[in-house]
Length: 261
Image 1 (cartoon, rainbow, N blue to C red):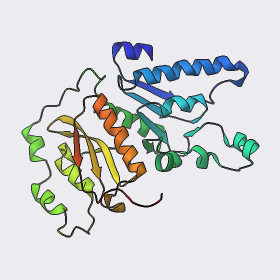
Image 2 (image 1 turned 45 degrees about the vertical axis):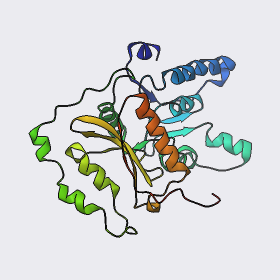
Image 3 (image 1 turned 30 degrees about the vertical axis):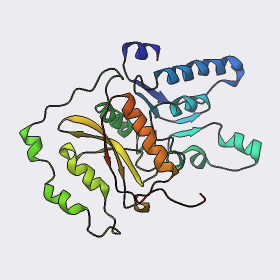
């Protein structure tokens, strides 16, 4: 981690760990504190990506939760402070690994996980895809890809974009169609697709240049803002700001969701 920060290279963690050894007492916790300190010092300086490749507990998930992106694998990745057995001992609550810290829970409820995959190979391939959008560090911008006539010819037609937004303001439409319509090769790398679905965040390329995309999704809650969607957008915008990634915003929002919640 020190070397990655020194040379300005992304730091990728592959995690499959039971956490600290209780036998080592406070020294093991001090060791984790050293790791957390480096997570914090590297935040906004180099991209940090964590892949949770198996059951992880305690310190082995505190650190990934501090990184920029967390990827999990369905039915084999778990993140929890303490396992189901400890929870049962302390609170008498019976809970499964999946309910306590499974990929579905963290991607849909807690928002700790940014993407879920069917297997390890998919997770690693998607990490490579994500790295293709990111600069090496906060001081250098990612070089943009050359934009060719072939790319221009294969863009979505303006006809599609002209007709995607309905005349009736009460009728929903899919904002993903709009985003892909203005992106190179109609590709959009979505971040946190299962969490706060009324807000869309992710990376795309426009004429070979990487942009961060923030957009309301009219198909979910009419694109309304609530706490989760606001936090999701804010986290993504802070990342883009730290790494000099321009942000494109698509706004179609009736406002903030009212109510006591």
